[in-house]
Length: 324
Image (tube, rainbow, N blue to C red; front, side):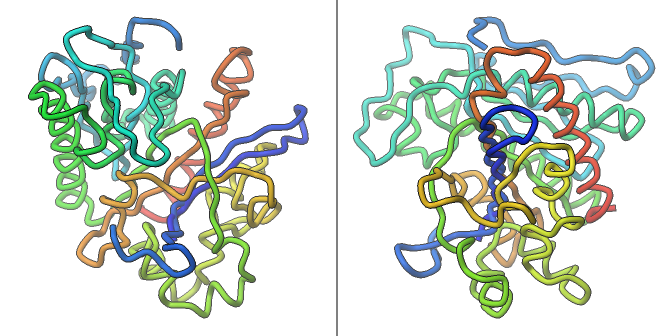
């Protein structure tokens, strides 16, 4: 089960869809899965004057196709689908794998950077780790295995794919060494379906396979003496979805919307969350995938800024509550 939170019908606006994939669910067909801006210029990171001395300079991969900013919090924010670079020398992806998507999640890079900056303000200069892919999704998809994420055996895109995941592993190792536990938040802008959320709370809490297959397994293991699994999944005062709901954004899962409606799309979590989340017993970094709907990413800038504030506050609360 992978934590995914979805923000849907917003009582403030018309019909809002935000799917924060608390990627707690990882399922096989009917069972539980055991496998594993339109602007061409990337948004520059904000360096607040009062925190300038503590700011880590970005580290770039080959050809500046990936970017890594070391952090000082047990929080990693990854942005795989917000790249603005489409070099002609890199072939477009042409694979026919199921559900292959080649369009960018527009403005996710801008949102992810700003969320990281707002979190830094909340923690008085301490920053999340930030990992950004700068290549467009038609050229590379770092949220898929390499055989699906790059076209053919082109050395440039293969190196770029490996750079991104080397940065992920570097950040994860750093968090493990310095903090002993941590959280990975993967930011996206699309959605598909999931079934386990439709089970009753008692069915979910009674099934150890759901809990052990979750990308926040480590968190539940630490908190299982005083919280049930569904408390972390969609509790009113104990889940990330519940916190976002308190800001007026309908989230799935949350205490208001425990599961998506029959005709609502909901994504169960991609390659990065599945690979690096704590559903693997030897891993201690929990992972949550956040799906932000187009209505919040495109168009009304003030609406987007309001959401960035709500999301950064909610993640900051979750970090303080469960990661110290």
